[in-house]
Image (cartoon, rainbow, N blue to C red):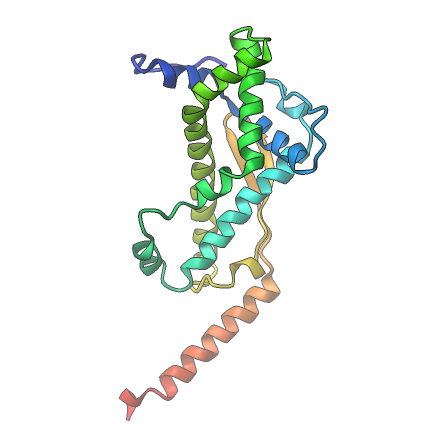
Length: 221
């Protein structure tokens, strides 16, 4: 896969862009899966251009990223604007998601593996020191990757639910469970089925509450 880089002045950033592609992001999630299950004696290597051959556990792990989107949507409730305004500068669910011990170890492991290919570093100690040097920039790249997918998933889900008449988002997890449907070099696609029976129930309750509010509103006399 070829890539045009407009600003070639930032050497470290360019190194990271060349080092990490979709295959490497998938590798991080797969490695985290093995580490979490204490089965890291042999972790399959995901090769560029062969994403069709990678284990399904990658998609299983990335489903958690989509679940995070649902959690964030639910926090909006029926007032997304107020939720956005109430978030402080330290509010960063993406960092909470990627800065776990498993993800950190997986990221370091993936960098070291990649260094064997890009820089021929087979000495473990030397590769470890080089990985430490690159870690901050690679971690930021992972943050951007997760944040981008999180934002896109939230946007698509909210848009779809609004079109179906749902504006109070506080019970979204009862309606949807998005799953990774496809991964290729360009990005991730997800699928989601909306529980129509539950949606009708929630919409019906909302309508009943609104009618009751209007009926007993003192302003009506």
